[in-house]
Image (cartoon, rainbow, N blue to C red; front, side):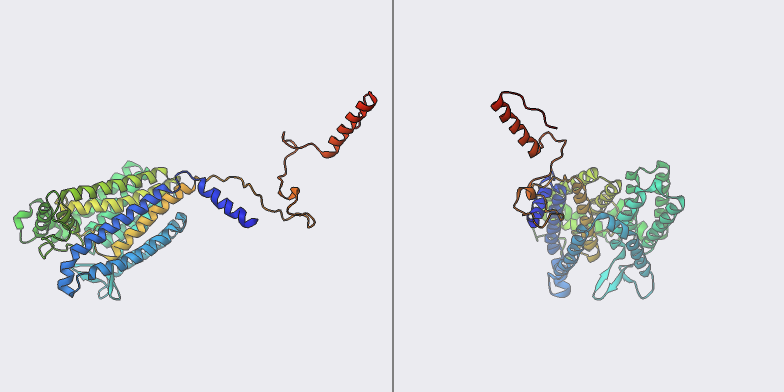
Length: 446
């Protein structure tokens, strides 16, 4: 009987939710669709390079599958745990990530690639701590700015100093693009939290000043900005990447050259399976495919905004906004770089570009977003009374469970539907029979 009651209670709880976790299911399906398209494009973009370097054209594709498996396991773990627990752990995880970023500056420990020291060795793999830090930065930033008006000035300044230190460590790797994305994400979370405009303007001015100082000290960053304004002035030098990307995008035409038939990926377009993977996509799927990708990002953003608006807690709303900025905003920046609308940066396309740290961080971010959607719907559960009440522990041993007293609910004496006591009913029946036999009214018994 108790087992039947528990099953019935579970069924009632399931059907008492209106549109049960609809946004969560949509986000899960959209994320898997995004991931599938990314794998298809990565296989085409990386095949020529992998075949020339290792003799196995599917090498990068296979490694990416391993990264995806790890990311999906972590994302599933995230969706199975309450958001308050994740937020509570975000501070420690953020400090650990910043410690790993600091470790990249230690000579002999950090790994340099193309003049930038951003990676740490983990056996045969490389980890990029600045990418792994992004989900924790969103969680902790939402917690900080969501409770901003209730925190002391000392605590505000302490965490702002920690954020500034982490961004400065990323900037000196050097990695201006990731620093800009992380800083912009925090700034937009603070804007959504309703912080005073004076503080927001001061923070934005400080960020722009730091970017100007970095550009003035790093000659290659200045060259990228100059080549972005006029890439044809140095077509064989600083403007080479952008020109080859524009040639790939323009060669796609309306319908594209066809899957796997990109010509620019054949050793013309550099880093075609990471930073410029959209260029290969645009060449093979054309203008129509590019517009469909932008529509997909718009749909993903719309669902995310719905999740943010329906969130019951302000901190959850800020978490959803931060996740959207990381996933969709970074995708738009990558597309802007590929089409020449933004200066060339080393920023990957989430869930599409090759890279373990970026893939794991993107899947964890998507898992956090799905968790926000689930908790927004779980708060709308309506508990209904059970039709089969459980057996009371105080029931007498002599009472049979099949007797009416064991299954009939106990009604309140004040209820209109409660039955009259049995002795009073018998007395009234005897009184009516006595009056009918004698023809005289019988005395009223008290």
